[in-house]
Image (cartoon, rainbow, N blue to C red):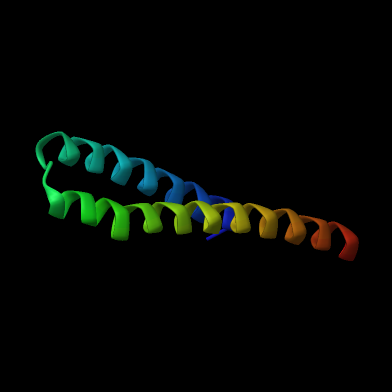
Length: 70
């Protein structure tokens, strides 16, 4: 599986999870929900976005390396 396909699948999964979390937040509004958002959801979201940017940069570098080696 290519990095682009993997990146696309991860982006889609993050978007789906974001949508589900928003639906959940409409109904779950207590302190535990706030704690989950702050200590679990936001860090996961941020780490995933960082990983996606890194995958994109790695994909670009690999493309350049392939061109240089051709």
